[in-house]
Length: 572
Image (cartoon, rainbow, N blue to C red):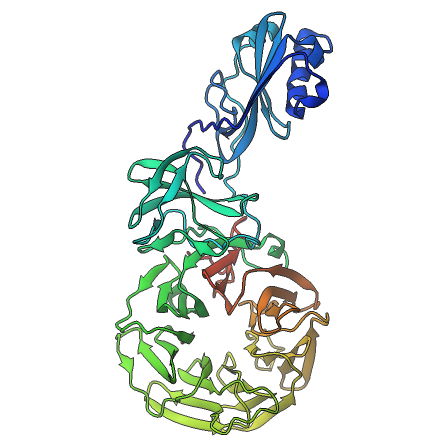
């Protein structure tokens, strides 16, 4: 957030005029000013020693707390609740500006300066870091969809939005945003704890003020037009040393995203699917890739090939299902033969552009489903042909190719691993519930001299995540998370392979993941367990500096905005 342009915003909340009253009736900020006056006159004063005292309360946006005597004050990011205190002693008025927490006290009229024999300061304070006051994950708030530097629009037929001089419900109304109006988003978000409203500073046809984005799940304003994300240009890698600084950096507005995927090609390509269709973006500059398609509704899964050539997405159009693959280089959508007409639960690309599809209807144990279709299929995209169609006894939750493309895995009631070359089974392991999905291959790690890098696969198993390594000489198994409340579902590794993350549902509804748990691979220690609004899917960016989460209101980007990124270079 850039520093606010220098201006004074003052809201009169109340004025109290009293004289000769008991000290306990005064706010503590009055006593702070009395103490400052005591130091100036060289003797201890109390309220009963004053002729009168009074104060006003306002929000100020500079380090001088709005005192006009101070030259060159510094603009601050978040307004400070300020008391302007006037103390009358011996018929002379002395004015002080006092921050609500008492941390700043500024003499603010010539009389007090004459008393102390000091000139007016030429500057006060130092620049305040431009950080939002909003809590991590925005618990209790309607999750923000707007982006600073973008635009917002009040829909046709909507109720006008108030424009206020301060980011709170007590701010003075200075205008309205009428239905159908588009405004520029200048700053924000600012979170008002009492009302649970998120405020944005906007320019409404020349009138600049604060307006509410929404409240209690109801959005008043919607993102409008092409929005460039305000991601920091310099971002640190997400690892065990930096993860304590992990926080939301920005959000990409998207209608009910359900699936997100990255490709390392050309610095990183991001694909998003949801009820709003499917989009692809270049992570280097967050520009949208033009897709030569008729945008579908209800996209359930997306995947993008490692080389960035193919974008695959599945669509549900009650009661039918379909699979599409678009060549991003040519813009042509491939006409795949034998596309499955069944729920598509997972898509995965190999390094050689094989596409695997996991299908089937979620059927509770013991429930008859005579018409259910379950299994997995595989397509050779360069030659546009289906090369495998394997039925399974129960629905396939997830499919995944190993990083080197030699192994293929799927999960039903068991986790299965076979070789791609000839289908030889190398793992068939029962797993415990209640996971609905979850399967991830670890990025290849350095191998001992004379050996190839070993593939390792992670999958949910009850209240733990199992990690099995297939080495040339020996195999190893590890597990992560043993707490009774931990029921991992979707899994993902950091690009360096040093972290594993899992979406963890809450205890009330095990099908609703709400916590992103991140573990250190080497030690097994949990490093982060932040709660967010419903998370449907997530993915690490190829450069390791971002985690993209799909939430009901858009794709949230988590990252580390402090420090200098090390290799590989960050993008965005």
